[in-house]
Image 1 (tube, helix red, strand yellow):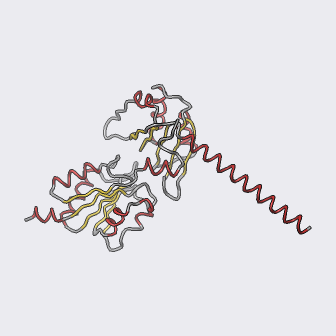
Image 2 (cartoon, one colour):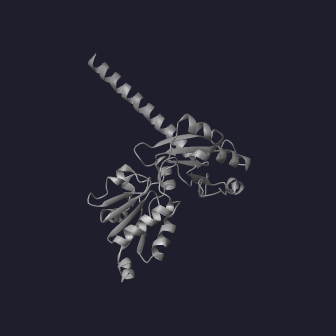
Image 3 (tube, rainbow, N blue to C red):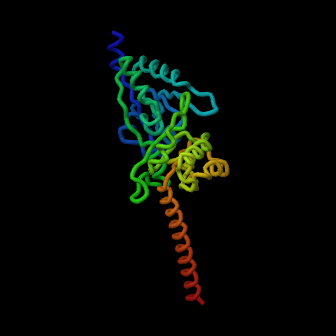
Length: 273
């Protein structure tokens, strides 16, 4: 009897995207707004949390570096406990649940327990944040591919730096802020040019987004000088040059606009003289 009850309960693993509520999929928004219980992470933005229905029970299970946080085991148990209670349970994760979000582990766990689970994809940070920073992940003549990696590991970080350096592709590193020195030295030591363009994107797709551009050998200096805080992405590759060009064009357009405004004012003064 209990098994049938569990199977009638429904859990949605929802990718909420990188922060901007306008980037939520229609399906994700429907799942959130129809939920009886919402279990959400640290990376879910305030703007998206504002869309949570007021009559839903909201349970925070965030994990943040240096702060009290839930272990994955505690999160798993919380999901099971609420799923047993019945109703529509919505597990909301920042970005996409299947890209460094441990959504696969949670899905398998709940399925093994007999629950009905569906997964709703979200825009991952690497796509959303780079786009909002005018950095294409691929660009003709600059990069024909991209690789996402995480600098965080449960035990030991095992990354083949030589393979990454040889790819000649865009690298997007999640959770790498505290490992900036290791990332830069490892890639340069593996043969990637020290002058390779890099970008640090802080609070991507949120109103407080900041993008800092520089070179690979400046990565630690850029982080420290600009006091970049988590959540932040590190983007490495020639595609960062596109953002540099966009910044230059924006500055040029501003100067042209200011010059045109001054000329109009001078023209009006001449007419009234």
